[in-house]
Length: 379
Image (cartoon, rainbow, N blue to C red; front, side):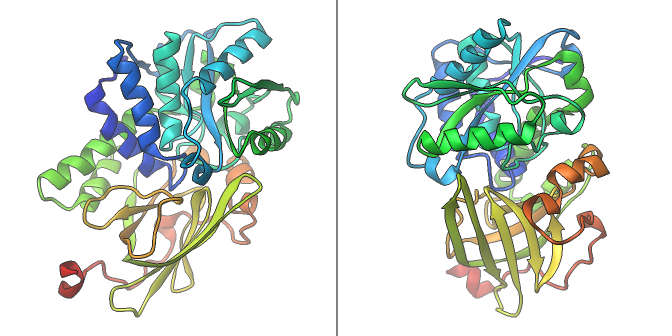
């Protein structure tokens, strides 16, 4: 059922979206500020379910593209995603009747909200990743038969371009990535324009309302002095994601991070508080692979998230720092993302990981305890 998003909802929504974003999707505070200002100006954001769309509605997802670490230094002006949408509308000769996220993630769950407020159209409560992935062809839209091109791309100077690679979604990603690098490492896009009927067939439903629920769950657990991780696990049980659990707790002791070919790549190392165990997390914009003592505990497309131990606040890959005390929390991905055709597009091999996908709930749990020594809490 459709609902109006309020300014009070925003902090919970971006918190939950950052959690689902698995470390990627951009700084959530940037998107929250853009949407908050639009609402302060008297504009509104209506969120509708896929079931409320007409079959022939023309829905165009909008998003940020590039290295999240660069976005921290090059803040958006606010017009880029709208410029991209208008460029695509001009190219296709069709006006969008709604927009939606391409992924769940910090800024990329909020860019469509801002576009909707400024463009006067609703936002669909769904997306094409159910988490965040670093490349544009890694969409359930593409897996189940929707072409991404034509794509419109824009930068903060008002420059726009159209990328039309026919039905080749990977080439669309490659060309858009080159343009993004030339634009300084960040851009905004509109792509995967599709019918309402296609959204019901190919999108992961309810991810915006899920982000709102998960963000509220973490906040209320903290306010009520309950365990945020237990509350999060309980909240996931009745959703498409079904399962979530802490797989490691400790302190970040090293982060190797670099920007390569438009992506933020690297590895984080977390040590247990007694120093006997460790967890490594590989990332490419998003957290992809978590190993405890060298053994895989969660692997893409399942979600690997990192949250502050005391507050449950999600930490993005670009903001993870030495000394952070964290929980590593794994979440099972929806079944439509675990099919053979989906795994060919965004399974481990798509990231050069030479392991087969095994659902995290089937991987053996380690012996690591999440209990924190008393001296560590006092520091």
